[in-house]
Length: 491
Image 1 (cartoon, rainbow, N blue to C red):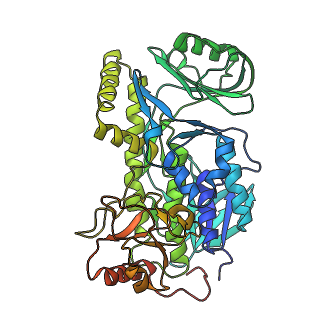
Image 2 (image 1 turned 90 degrees about the vertical axis):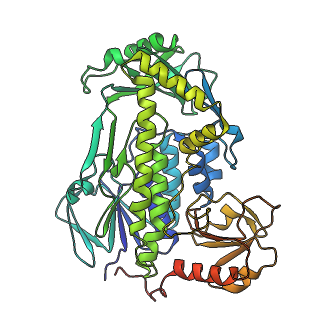
Image 3 (image 1 turned 120 degrees about the horizontal axis):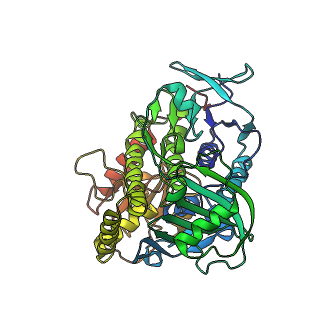
């Protein structure tokens, strides 16, 4: 019997979120992190609306909000603005917060839930059979568990040991990063400017320091190992934005190349990939950390059900089926942004910007773009014919008699919302699943009953009809799977 049910490799936002999900469900989980200390380098800043909703579903969003700066208006192309304040969500914004702030929040929660985090543990080998996965660590030690999830980044050792192809390409234009102080900070919380020579961003840390980011075509041939002086970053901002905001001090700088790649598979037997191990893309659009956290929320409850012996047939396979598709869509979105602002042809850049402006003029296309960018439009295709249109959709934060829906999801369990008004569905399922009565006004299109997955998507929905209680009971039975094991050991 393995003392650990699941080993997560990597202590970034994806790995920490996954470990929290597993521990919340009572799964014995351990994180192995190659780095001996927490890094002081942070590349991710944007926490989008859907990610904030999912953090709210675990009681974490309100703790993260004070650490960041809300941005309610984005400019995806010159002359094109996207007003996020009109989004139908509790969090109509992009929260600008350094990745370190998100990581510290998640690590604190993971430790509260009893997750063991082992730093300085480098994976050098992997083997698996029908019952377990064995990891070989540098120094000769081994660790074993029923399942392993590689959340170890773009250069994932786990993915390499599995032999899974990481297909894609490398972008040509280097990204320049520097942490600086400013004599004249920009008025906008998220400043962005682009021009023929590239793109620049200025993002606040909230403590007086700012992250200066530049894609500078004039400097794209400089080797990555050449030091980046503040004078070079100032020059890039002056040429592209017309101002350097009075950069007067620099504590850190770096150059790197971004890539557009996706793993061919997200699963190999008992080993899974999530976050940057599964997909990397241009930072434009701020999708990386958000997609990884959402990977973790999708996989966590499914893996926990498998450990408990409650996973219906094929449940673990739905992780790759659902999230690989989302990863492909994110790569397409970020690649489009990259070509929009960094394409070689000025004519094509102008045409793409015109296309974005036209899309934002019409309600349907504007909502589609906003849904893709914020994650609120992400959904999963139904696996059965004649499924209700809500099946696989993000469920909004419905008001219920016992509280908001996302408050009621905080224990990580399925939730059946009964909107019939009579409570017939709730009575039919009894204690088989957690039940809430809808307490809001009549909403066009709202199902009479909806079974909400732990990650906030509809597993099943039904309209008001005489056999609705029986249909709800059957749906709950399908999601619950077989009876749980008396001891949640690895299979």
